[in-house]
Amino acid sequence: MGIVMILVCGNVSEPVTELVCARLEAEELAYRVLSPNISTDSALQSTVHTQWTNGEFHGGYFSGPDWRLDVDDLTGVYFRPLQAPAADLPGIPAAVAQALQAQRMAALSAIIDTLPCPVVNPVLAGMSNSSKPHQAMLIRACGFPVPATLITNDPVAALAFAAEHNDDIIYKSISGVRSIVRRFGSQQAERLPLLRHGPAQFQQRIQGADVRVHVVADRIFATRIETPSVDYRYAAGDGEPILMQPTELACEVAHRCVALTKRLGLLFAGIDLKETQDGEYFCFEANPSPGFLFFERATGQPISTALAHLLAGRSHLSEAR
Image 1 (cartoon, rainbow, N blue to C red):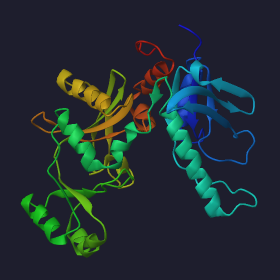
Image 2: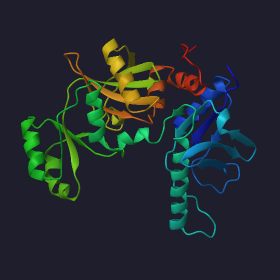
Image 3: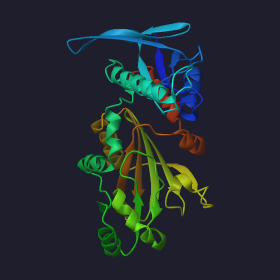
Image 4: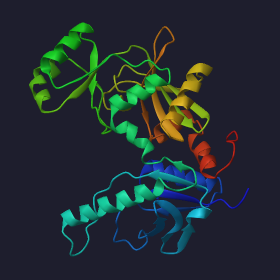
């Protein structure tokens, strides 16, 4: 295998990106960090130079204060562009700084999606998560059942849907903006007139255990989550207990997870499942930029090691040490 060189595009003070960098170092894999945000800090300033002719990509390079990477030398890119507030640029109004940041991100996203090496994950591939209804159709096409769903801004329709499902439904956002999943109850019913200002997504509540599946290329890391909380991510804040442990998936379910990841054009995904008492697996969504640190800490599964191997351009992912 040739020389390994990885580009990490993200904020190293963000915990997940920090873990990726730490794992690359532990695996003795060479990498450089490109900040996706405008900065006045000279240590974070960078240059991106690429060239297209008649719509065809003809190479380029990324560089920092003391390094340069040619596109052709990259074995992999980890892209986690969490939006940070625009930098306070001397002499430039805040609105202009925000516009510059948006332009930088648009240009960087276009370049990332054109690179010939493996990218975790392409920006365009992650767009399916921006529309939960659209992604649900792709999920169903891969063989997973999805909960009965209503998207509406009509309060009467929302109440009828709740009645149809014995008032046991949840609600959440339609877009990729993170929201807390909550049960629909009398308090929410009182606020239904606000629904006229924007639609929400209501779903049948599926009883069972949560299963979070991280897919890294063709490897599966599944975590079974037991908690009374409707949204396990906020169990601790809700004062509810939570138990997380590694679990094995049936071959058919694992294959569906890999197939869904590939169908979405992703190399790395966090897939949320619910296992019913009958052994059926419902799928809620696939996250194209999963915060896997929470799961790796709780279970010890080597998700970051598998990711490091993928970024190194290895033809197969060896078992983690």
